[in-house]
Length: 271
Image 1 (cartoon, rainbow, N blue to C red):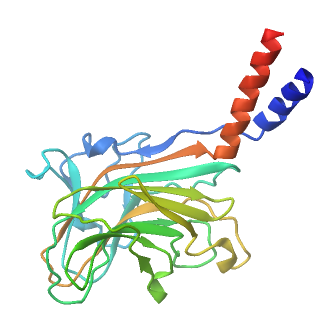
Image 2 (image 1 turned 90 degrees about the vertical axis):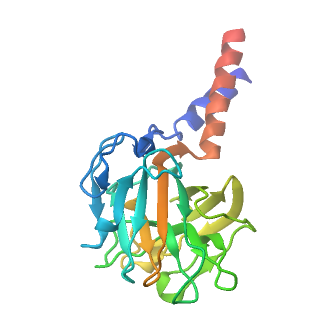
């Protein structure tokens, strides 16, 4: 019996990914210089922030607003053209690996002056190895505005932007300048993701654009997790991002394999 357990432990252990580590951590943007975020490479490990929709990345600036008392990234601007900035990751996930994106987002808007609603301040996650000129996001979330009462609301993107597609995942009242904590967990094996809003699980969703939607049915990688500003024209709105980090963890089944291994080793030692 002990031999069977030990053998099972070794076999299952081989399925545990070797890499389970921090991919990028802004460390609260405290080590960044005040001013434009694009071009800076502070963080761990060091990765330069890029403008993925030139020249709109100048809306994102490292600042120290008095309302928070620490260093954050502030996004402002009145253009209707979206802006996207992020450090490039471009890494193929290992089998049995969950990719986690965490960020805190706040915004100031209290009324929508022109259009009925605003996607506002978001994080969109893209692959880099798709066979199209313009990438399509595979997951997204952020803070929008309820068109009926101008309330700030969290949302999760569940469809491609060309067809609309946001869901309000939780009945959460968000005040102006109140940070909301988002955590997205992406499983590239099953092409699904799960978003937690202030710790509340919003449920399992399929990738917005799965691998089958690309030519050649590619194996999707983790390209980047953009800070996005999708503003309302002429809106006096400011969004804030803080505590941005990306890391990987083994999926639960792989963790179970590790427990089996420890159990097998303990039984062998006891014998």
